[in-house]
Length: 189
Image 1 (cartoon, rainbow, N blue to C red):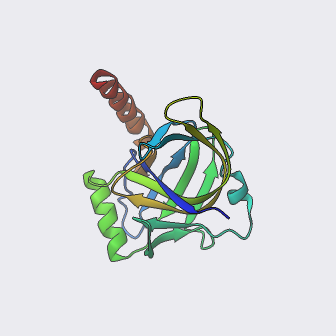
Image 2 (image 1 turned 120 degrees about the horizontal axis):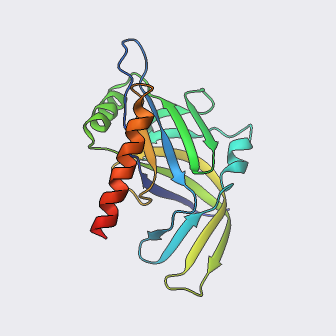
Image 3 (image 1 turned 90 degrees about the vertical axis):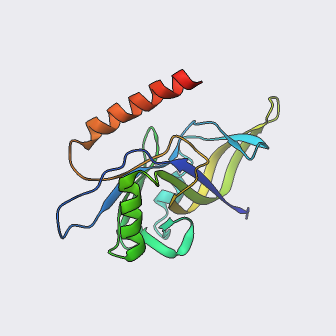
């Protein structure tokens, strides 16, 4: 079995539910398919669609959502029904019901302020392809054993998204924000 790895990505859709007595929900993408990123200036990497399929279909898997990859700060888990994961055309989508704990409330406040807006995931590569005919080499991940997703402070993959769900009209606001960020990014490059 391979070495466990982690990858970090941006979370951009930040909204919260504001009704009292409702738990706070975070939704977004822990991984985005076909998004090339540099891994420590050693090689580039991208994740192919379907890479999480086996992990998500395994009835015995128990994937957790963590804060900063800290196994002492569990935010949710699939076995408890507080974390749901699925693959769509964009990537690994998650929906997370935060617990009523100090660190979860602190996280929600930091996300609401925009201080934390990134996501990561921990995995072991079980299928990969390498292309050494380019500089840097390209690693394409085709299959992983997924252990956890994390809300984090520093990303590796820039295109992930997460949001604290506040209302139904947030999707329109998120789309506007993504378009604006893409415009700004295009101007800066």
